[in-house]
Image 1 (cartoon, rainbow, N blue to C red):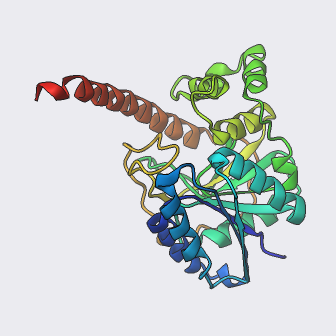
Image 2 (cartoon, rainbow, N blue to C red):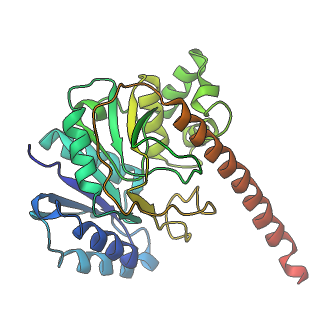
Length: 302
């Protein structure tokens, strides 16, 4: 089986990009994998130097079967960069592994992704394979399914990406008309509905909430590992979307996560554990915003 091409999306964080690529190079499948790096253009004069630093670094990258760099002439933003890049790769290759510049991979990440793509390639109920698993206390199965899609180190096929709907208003309308708003929010534990509303109102430009909603509405499922093969380093405030910046980091699994075919349905144990995580994350995010607002208001007094 041919390995899926890897798409890495970068912008203006040279250190994060270096850490991501150095971790990816430690995957034994890297030497057999084609790497495509999509580099967004600078948004303003202040970011120009950092963008150039990133581009100078990625031009020297080796350790992969091939490296192709796509330099955007202008800043098109993270959402457009990912949507366009993923569409291009799946149309050309039929499948893809997707990373952003703040994701550290386990040395077993690529093996997990490619094996998941192989095993579930013909299963129309499976929309994607995910490498990140949330930091929950519960012991989870080696692999399990959750309805919807996710965005921190993932893989899909052309058929999976074909359900992606870029129109957030249409997605919100469908969720409302089918009375699925509460279940979309992990039974009220998360704030995904609000995020989708914010996207439709131009307050955020999240591709990920539309990817999740597209898969959810089509009643499709994502395969997760019981132990995370991805760690996110973007909680330092340098990224475009850092919704979980104040949530505890998850350690990388020191061992491989093996995949055997399992029935495609929502794992109740994992679902409840994820709901608990989202509930905790939502509460901490709200308190974080209150605290930040309080500091802004009263900072002059000190």
